[in-house]
Length: 107
Image 1 (cartoon, rainbow, N blue to C red):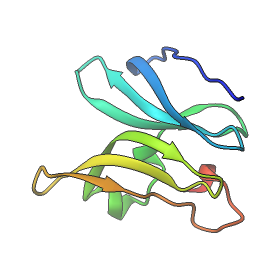
Image 2: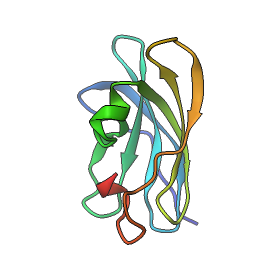
Image 3: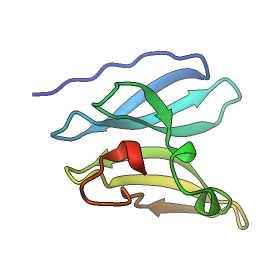
Image 4: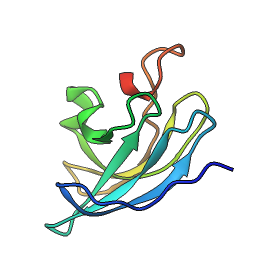
């Protein structure tokens, strides 16, 4: 069984993993020092933690903010919660890699 642990990084007060797939890609959310939540992904290739909002296309990022990544499947699709910027409505999102052959580093 794959395991992940809670760790800290410079931009977050704490990070909470909430999903891992068969490729050891970990997703979750971090509570920032300002009290906001940001969705993150740690791809097995490279192992660095990235803000999921910085990996989505800029047009999508201008419309909503992903706050919590809750799960990731073997195809790299991530189940996430976020806020629609125009209305403030809380919604579910499904960010997906651009091509099936790419992993989540290419969102």
